[in-house]
Amino acid sequence: MLAAEDAPKITVPICMLPSKDEDAEEVKKFEAALTVPKYFETFKDSPHGWMGARGDLSGPDKPNYDRGYKLALEWFTKYV
Image (cartoon, rainbow, N blue to C red):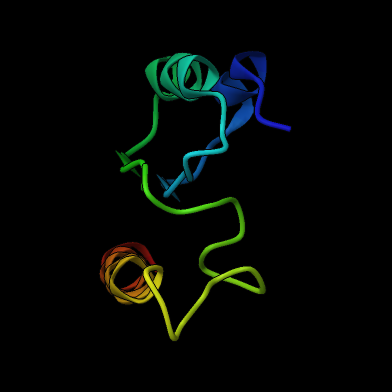
């Protein structure tokens, strides 16, 4: 589970793409507590797991799935 008190322990860049099911306030607190390069974008139309097993690739999750993986690829290209 995401906890803002864990954020200061992170020492590497982080990209987070939360879903509509994540606690938005906790995500904001976590992001604010980070001191490393970061990228956060909430996918408010997608359920938890939308980039994995729960993604409906033949339905409404497909555009977010494509965008999410594009963002992840760009992130990893920049930081790995």
